[in-house]
Length: 255
Image (cartoon, rainbow, N blue to C red):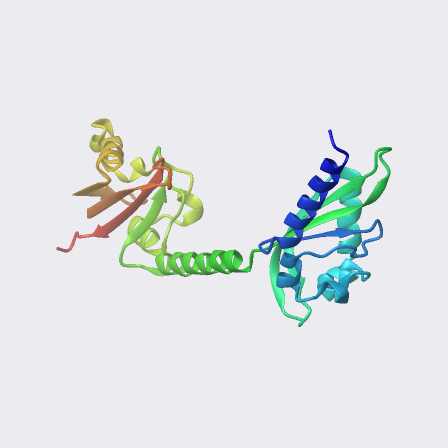
């Protein structure tokens, strides 16, 4: 085998790393000094190679993280455990922040001596923004549902255990959330309906057909009855697995 082949292979790998733009991939010395810089690092962080090589990588961290010793902790963890991975805010040359996924791997020589670190960074700002928007939307929806008083809206797990409770449910049925969460929804049915298996059939129908709708008598905490319109919708995850039910009840007694 030609001795030039390993050298050529190494050169090709270096060219590959240098040309990658979707990941910041660079090398650190044992003390955290930047010693190499690729196109992705330049794109994410805004520094040209000649501006950043020779400087400490801690400048990419926020002042708060620097003061807390996070950069040193990251290197120590990578050295001790063989890898460090985390997400957090990082700072560009212009002072703007981006949300980063960071992986740091130790590099050792043939004797096992630590000679530096390989650091890979991905910009996940858009993903985080999407997650935050979804979280905010879910929180608004949760607050909306919890504040509704004209409908009892609550969630069940796949076997009918109550997992959420809104103001309308408390108003119609008389139970505070702390009294009813963790109980089975069958307690809202009459003894006759429970004996006839009506609650389980309702869930079976919703699971099989996607929706169950009916009217009938329901029982409040104080034992009194009200005539209810009930809708139960099956909730499935993206894989199609049943993860629970959404149950909506209206009091139609006066009608």
